[in-house]
Length: 117
Image 1 (cartoon, rainbow, N blue to C red):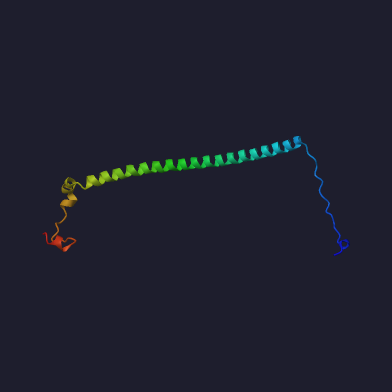
Image 2 (tube, rainbow, N blue to C red):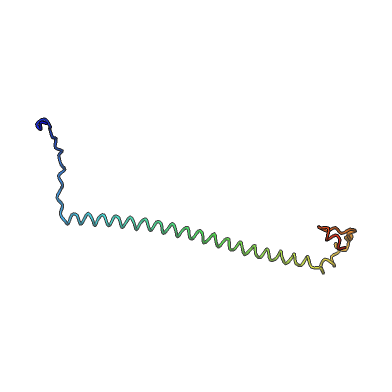
């Protein structure tokens, strides 16, 4: 091997600029300020979005509670009407019940029930 046949091409190196400690400190402070500002903005946006979502859910919950109360009131009034209309006193005194014919033959669900007659 002959070393004279090999040519080396040296790559030009980038010359690094010398920077002072003050310049590095300023760059670091600037980067920290940008990072902290970005974090604060992002967290503020997330907080506002979550607060809005909570408010919407609270409003929907309140509407459903009102609807539930209305349904409970309606249910109570229907139960009261049902209880009132199904009392034996109202059935006996009702003219519609009096005009009905009595059943000639009573048929129950099971054979054992039919044998009770």
